[in-house]
Length: 611
Image (tube, one colour):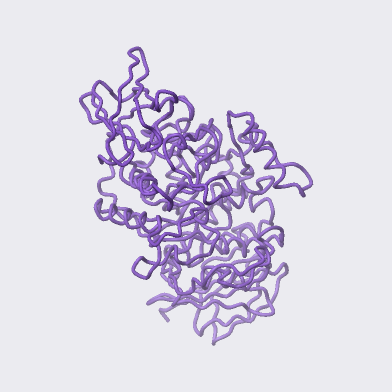
């Protein structure tokens, strides 16, 4: 614990302060308040300054004075009560945890629900989320994924502009409220995933440049200079972010970290930062006796991220599969702009189900080069599948959800494709009941020049659209993105939520679906019909899923293995406000069965083994 940066309260009115500042010759701690005072922090070697300071308790405000000229918040601040430009605060780390019996869930049991704290409830706080945990658990969710929580400028932000990686966003309720939420999640049997950003810091309130070489001018990212993971003096930078991961896992009992945009972490060293991070997290998980996971997000389609360390990989546990989303989205919407131009046939969705990455080294029209590498040898449970997420919704000009773009039947089909996939399913907040609010891009920066630059950049990004995107800085842009949770209980919204709940129940209860193995699965496209046929099995269980993407009803010869098959769920059933399922009873097959498939439908069949 002694090596972790920041202010650590030791009890008895004593606080240890530690900061890495190799750019600084003389560093002082300024304690603000009625008894404003300066304390010199002595060098502790390797560019660190450290001291145990008496008379400092939780609640004390402080800043660092650098070479008697600059005053800056703590790079490892635990709280910024007056915003990103204000002083840091000493916090009390002790908390009465009630999850001693919680050791986490296997990754194969994860059903992920991604949410943004600020828009999930009208209050926009950690505390307000707690009341919604029972209904999410009843839905079938087993893991909540929070978009980034590190302190960002203002009160409205997606979280990817965070500038204090150790400080919990104050407007959401701060560190203790987050611990109460995690504690409640574990009480309800829900794992907690935190989205962390180790590829850049936001542009406003980022003062790490004044302390040391946290950034490198050797590489650029879409957000500016890259973090220095491989250049001179990079060892303490790597340790800063590794300690941050361990901080969330240890101090906040977080079960998994989603690592944002790993393609923007440039580290060609023989022992990459991500390998060190994976080893450190695995060691800490073993020490704590818990299951802890690292989930990659990257557009490189690089299977090395999720290959085990023993096989020369980087040792991360799972990977968001954008290809799955793109293939499904294009089939349902026929959109072809941007990266969607690389997708368009049912064979792409079949490849995502069967192999993981669709672009496995083949040529990409969008990138105008070969892209990716094969992931066919990797287990299915190393991939996270989704029809929607914050990126794919929020990075549209108008923030349209899938339900805004496709029909009712297509929305149910998309849900089944994700939920019954052999990968780890992820739902984006509100999709389970057909939320009507968009999810827009919003900010509340304080720097007028930055505000103007963000507005210009957003307009430039959608230059060829018919109208400008909403103003990210306007409060109403944020307000329009807030969920209408009351819709869960109304009309078709309630039907859709029940549909998701039923689909998730069958995923759990049918062993052939619950077992995520590529080896025990056949994926086949039924021609000329646009239907995906998937046969899965395990000892004592056999299931078939049919996904029809045709816009008209059709008769399809289905290679159903011989036996009697029960219809467990049919998206076209009148129960789900569909046109009718036309499959009133069991199907008896001698190896092939002709089935009348309504347009845009999903069917789950289970073989009877008792006759």
